[in-house]
Amino acid sequence: MAQPTIGFIGMGLMGVPMTLRLLGAGYEVRVWNRSIDKCAGVVSAGAILTDKLDDLVRHSDIVMLCVTDTAAVSDIVFGEAGVANSARAGQVLVDFSSIEPQATRMMAERLYTTSGCVWIDAPVSGGVAGAEQGTLAIMAGGPEDVLATIRPVLAPLSQRVTRVGDVGSGQVTKICNQMLVSCNVLVMAEVMALAEKAGVDAEQIPVALKGGFADSIPLQLTGPRMAKRDFDEVKWHVKTLLKDLDMANNLAKIMNSSAPMVGLGVELMRLHASQGNAERDPCTLVSMYVEKPE
Image (cartoon, rainbow, N blue to C red; front, side):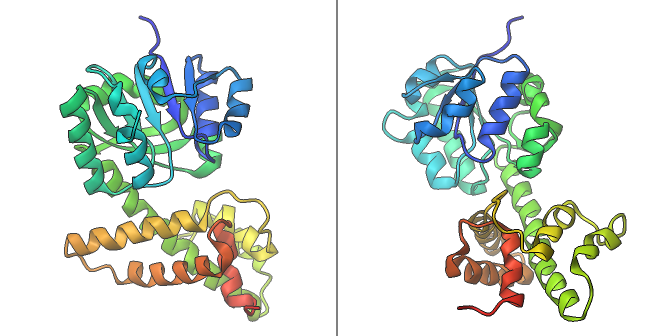
């Protein structure tokens, strides 16, 4: 049986390494991005550049998206000359983006009604390192039989694909993931600042806590950078965590579920972003506690 052809939309921090993994597994991958220059690396690795979405959709069995937010997904799928205009029955759209669950459900229904294309929401966790190494955790929502058919395609990207329910459930699970991650990194900044002010070598905190109950992947990856003030390389964005916390806060209100820590986290993250840090790495959060604002 021939391998399915893939169209990948969104050559950002995650999209590029994910595309490279698919190419490395032998898949034919067409790519599209608003800024064509961001496609250079994957094109040199063998991806086929398309300048029109309809061309990518017509030549792809599976269309994958990894873009910034709900508005971007909606525009790419339903905008002028968007995915929906060329989508067809039997095709699968896999959205790796982290977006609003309610919007996901509505867009999935609209796409299936107008074209027969099935939507799988499949947000990921693991960051750029996970994308590069093919060890992402994928939390998927959608029909179980359709997900089963694309699992081999997701294998080069992930250590695990977990179906958590119907379409939209993946996005709810990712919000839960981001609640944990965001609150973790906010507390981490306080910990590093407190330890340093109390005379502890903050660089040793991740080492001392490794393997204990307080250990985490964010602590091992971001903690040392906080301690060293190693802010230059951007591996993820403050604005992304703020967007995800906003979605978590909104979902909690809709579900009438109390989430006081998320509410505080949103305000702290928004404050930090407003001080010129939206595009910077979350390791910069420590600067709220160890450096006075200019």
